[in-house]
Amino acid sequence: MEIKNDFHIELPEDVKTIIGKLEEGGYEAYAVGGCVRDSLLSRIPGDWDITTSARPEEIKARFRRTVDTGIEHGTVSVLMGSRSYEVTTYRIDGEYADLRHPKEVQFTTSLEEDLKRRDFTINAMAYNERTGLVDLFDGRGDLERHLVRCVGDPDERFDEDALRILRAVRFAAQLDFDIEKGTRDAISGHAANLAAVSKERILTEVTKLICSAHIEKTEDLQILGLAPYIAECFTAIDPGHIAELKAWAATEEAQEDRIFAAEASAWSRPVHADDAEEDEAAKDDNTPETSGTKPEADGDAPKGIEGVPMNNVFALFGLPAPAASGTKQETKSDKAADEMMAAYDLTSPVSTDRRYIRYAFLLQGLDRKTAQDLLRSLKADNVTVKQGSLLADMSMKPLPADRYGLKKILAAMKPELFRDLLFIKLASRGTGMYRQACESEDIRKVISTFEDIMETGEPVYINDLVLTGSDLISLGAAEGPEIGEILNRMLDAVQKDPQINTIMYLISNFYKINKK
Image (cartoon, rainbow, N blue to C red; front, side, top):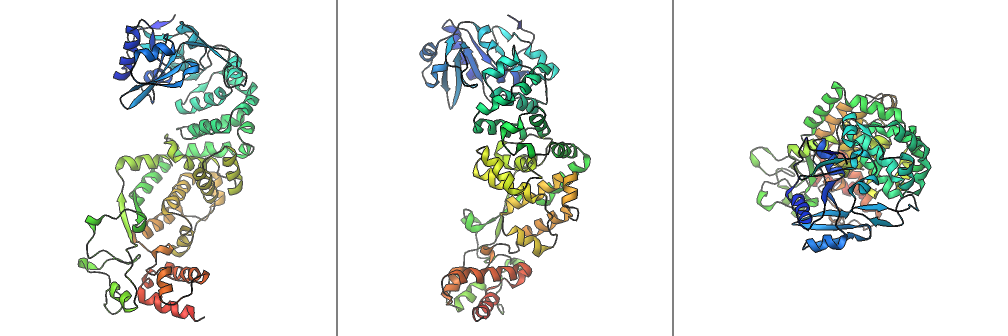
């Protein structure tokens, strides 16, 4: 057994406690797998898994709070405070019948047998403070060589569990490693095995890959012959464009673009008051009553007609004063801003919560329907399907730089999603695909115009109008489609000229429109 004691891993106190209690009972116990790998790479492990010679019932006897997570495969979750830790008995996997799961497992007291069944050498190391690092397959050496290599015979590993094929590519992307030649050849030879893997598991691996700092490694999915087994349309993705995106992201000009984007938005997101919790403590009599109307100097309330306050104008027509529909600013912290900007920076990893943005980059060049079909075939959630396909499609269509034209497009989207679109375009502008599709577009100018519209609170949406459908009905309009038509006409007018978004002007216009 290869044991190395030339370094120390700082185990969390909970992990020390679990290992210590098992050792007190006469059993072996080690931290194992990804947590050891990440510790050797000076990364913070997301989870700490423990392997032990104790049988499941013996594990449960040593701890007060446990859950039978996968007890048939030897896994018990030990609860420590608010966290849980998977503790699994050393085991030997039996025959794999479905290219995913062993028919049966056999418990063993041999750590070596347990480590031999694992996927890659970098995941087949164990550690405890008493013994040190147990590294039977030179996983530490492969970390130093930046290699993903199978434990033992790669053909056997991929015939046991086909998901390992995608995991190899994903680890190479997350760690910026190469795939060892023997392992790489075996992946190509066993590509068809992916047909046995559920689309949900494939989606999880592809998502982790594209949310890494090396989205360009999606090229391996095509080079190694995996794309047809991921999704029918996956072969239509242009790997050359993805490589261009990544190369552009690393340039000084792209870095300047990201600084420009962060400064332009200042990470203040406009939120309609009727969509957010009202902050009563911040309210006073000087709160603006309409969207697109700035408060007067010195805190005076906005005026209606001939100096009459807007609330009183409503009263003249027998209408209740509307709730404020203007915008209020929610300033995000610097950390949140950095995390959000990372989604557009293809040199940085990003949380999978922002996966729809990375899918938008990946699917650029596909029409919206093809992108939707691809994502649906992978069982992606509705948000990823709708937003990822929309952003991919629209990011390769030029936007108008004039305020009115921009508002007409913005009116069909939430401001947050529109900002995503603009920043995706900005991050793509150095590629040949973007230059060909959006040659006439000045994306920096478009971003500045959009941010100014948001900052000034100009009316964009129906609920930015000072009049509502209920107000129109109170004034005598018949209920039905006509109400929507009138509101849309009003909105079009105030999008062109925000100054006319006043009660008297719109009411007067309403009667003119109504008489047509």
